[in-house]
Length: 266
Image (cartoon, rainbow, N blue to C red; front, side):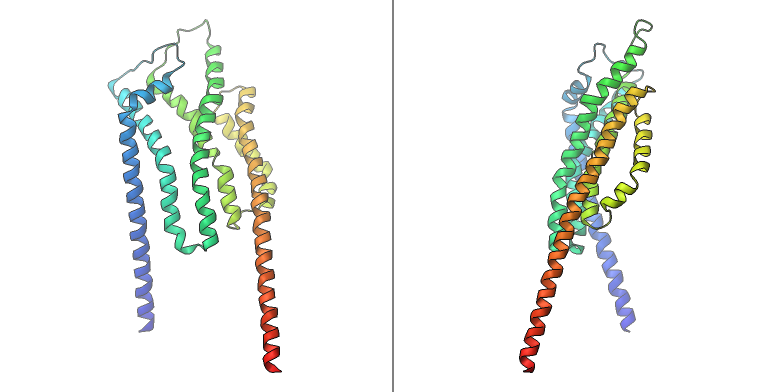
């Protein structure tokens, strides 16, 4: 009888958790749609921002190219705008399983996630993209008539900028995992050479076949990894210090209890 009651309680808990997760995902989707619609409302301004600096007008090869670009730009705005809300919904979902201290620490990461995502987009668009774009154009200077299609130009922009938006999240992810005790600075240092190898491969994938440009792209990624190790060390020291303080307070409480027990025994 007790086993049946326990099983029913477990099933209710699972059902409640799934219902809670469903509600969080629905709200996230609603916010995404709202930002997506907002992106379409201001699509002319957004398109003009990304098209600025081009000497030639972009060409379309079919009517669906226009729709594809508008959907892509509106989706980019929606992802960036929904990201902090999504992180907040994840925090609300896992909050019951966290201690008050873990709740406060994890909540403080949400603004950083959004700012780093925007910073990564800006870094890729304003710094890395012009270098690669100018280099590629210089290869055909004086040999070809240059004309860009909307589809290929914006695919090029997304291929360059989005990876940096993702990789800029590495430090905050590492800090969070370190605060949870999942990752340590020692582990990050131990796998450093493998991480460098992977980051260099990523750099070659998103940059043209030029050794200098590949190094230019890979260098910021390596710097981000080293920053992650440094921040992980800072978080680890603070975590260890708090654990030691907790142990000392626990030992003091035990000593006080022993003294009280000895007084009562006398």
